[in-house]
Image 1 (tube, rainbow, N blue to C red):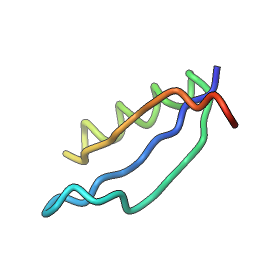
Image 2 (spheres, helix red, strand yellow):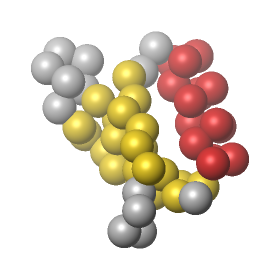
Image 3 (cartoon, rainbow, N blue to C red):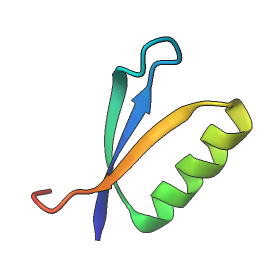
Length: 48
């Protein structure tokens, strides 16, 4: 399954970056975002 990862702006929550990734890559991005204090929005990407 593939997922869409959106990196969210800290001030107003607007998406700044978009990435389509598999589950393993999502896990890596979540760990990196947690260390950096970044906010992510992750959702399944059925049409990708």
